Amino acid sequence: MTFPVVGMVGGGQLARMTHEAGIPLGIRFKILSDTPQDSAARVVPDVTVGDYRDLETLRAFAAGCDVITFDHEHVPTEHLRALEADGIVVRPGPDALVHAQDKGVMRERLARIGAPCPRNRIVASPADVAAFAAEVGGFPVVLKTVRGGYDGKGVWIARSAEDAEEPFRAGVPVLAEEKVAFVRELAANVVRSPHGQAVAYPVVESVQVNGVCDTVIAPAPDLSDELSGQAQALALTIARELGVVGHLAVELFETTDGRILVNELAMRPHNSGHWTMDGAVTSQFANHLRAVLDLPLGDPRPRARWTVMANVLGGDYPDMYPAYLHCMARDPGLKIHMYGKDVKPGRKVGHVNTFGDDLADVRERAHHAAGYLRGTIDE
Ligand code: ADP
Image (cartoon, rainbow, N blue to C red):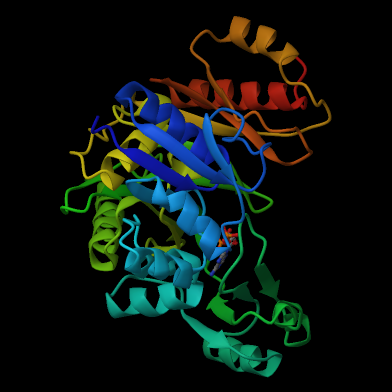
């Protein structure tokens, strides 16, 4: 039997959906999960429960796998180097992944390859922040811990030097960035395989609410062909230059003066690509698996004029199943993806996809379903 074993570190919804994508291909899939209750651990038959920060745990997990990949970027870079030294195939490899782990390393490298970024600098104190602010036109500036942030955690807007003390308390290096005046956030998603094949999905708009992704519209409405082409070319260049293998999400700002700037990178399936499960010929999860296995990549083209993804966040009702009756009866074209997670207010517990020719209608259907499942819409 040559069917490979793919090991994914992490047991969240990204691992759950990657597992789902591997089933029709007969790929054997294992995960290293923090707890048996994690989203993927509830459905993947082969689960190791353990701590990804422990090298021996990683070694034991990797021993049974043909390739190791990730549903998050938190595995210490030095552990990945140790696994590679043991002969384990790690995709994306640590030299690429470090750019998604450390925002300081990412900014420095993107500057070297000429990728447009907000002006930025590593700062060591509130006085440094004030000096940086003076250079970029004054406060407010954005401060970010270089490692460990997600969904807006680890990001601060500093309005003065006195306001800039909090980020330094964690003892992690801090990156200061100019506060970009943007009209919206975009994502350029690409997939690259070890032999250098790459595909680009349509550039999408991602709408954030309180630092959390709320809606993704594919393709980004009214994006000029020029900017869309630039964004795709930029993402492909970053993937190639950094040696990414697998899915790469390049989060972008579209600025008020019509430019695109890179916000951050994720080297794994990404929330901005969930629309591809129903809206593209090949989903990001299927293409991530193909890439880490060095199989030919699948067609990234959209299957409908418009696809809208809306995240389902937890609300006041712990059980969302009763809401299916109304959602499914109202919209037979609705696609529901739930992650099997316990509902907590504000937590991402699933998403819905809708697609069709009329953007206003496709958006309304997605928002209705997400709101109804959450319990904020009751008709
Ligand atoms: P996370 O790692 O939590 O996703 P991000 O770096 O994406 O952190 O920042 C979270 C949000 O903060 C972004 O989606 C954006 O809305 C805002 N933000 C981040 N950097 C900047 C910036 N330089 N200028 C303006 N807004 C920013």
